[in-house]
Image 1 (cartoon, rainbow, N blue to C red):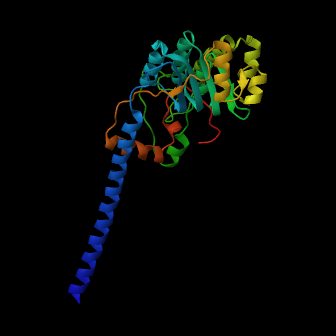
Image 2 (image 1 turned 90 degrees about the vertical axis):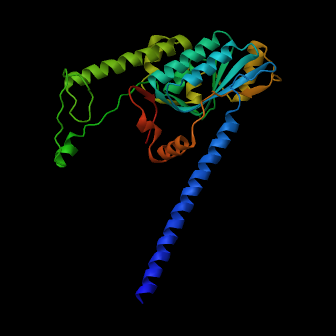
Length: 307
């Protein structure tokens, strides 16, 4: 009887072990397939030679600093076969510096050749900042844009820590070091300093809007209170140039810059370095467990009605 019980336990142990190994094999195989697909998708760098064409680039998801994206913009700017660039935007924004760098890259390119932004469902905050760098902005009637503002987020966890019996000890060089800090309440002086930083970056954003959209300071002050706009509202307020999509972008390129619609459009993507399969798996896991927005640090220009 004892032998039969031992045999039953051993069979169950083997069965569980087999299930674990099968799951591990599926995860590894999926990662390897993902790497293979990624390599096929990346292909050559975005400067696709051969003939004159209109380059199409994508700004999607959370905007952060990206040197490979910046290299792409520089390459497109210097490529004589790239007659114009269509920038398809679908993003709620991101970091202030990420939006600023993208704005500068697109503006530098638009000084040399026509660059037109085509907004998708969302092009708010830093994404709208980036669009300001283009020569012409088009959105759908139902696109969400605007949200011209800056935010710095923190949390006061001292009440929770007190309930848990945790007392943080902080030694620092001055009262404003590491403020805001979840481990201690924000002082009035720290709040004043943080507000000053926010207002300074907001002033930078408003200056961009005023200069690029040729709006008065008073007009921008009214528009830049953080609210979002539909494409229809944005057009009425002078924040965009037209309603439509890529078809309308090509029509504008033809009428304003004599770039015929028959000139082919080609997708251009940053030439990101290959990532090993372990990194792929960890990246997928991270995206599943944590919102991208929760991993942003510093000043943000992002519209997020809910996390």
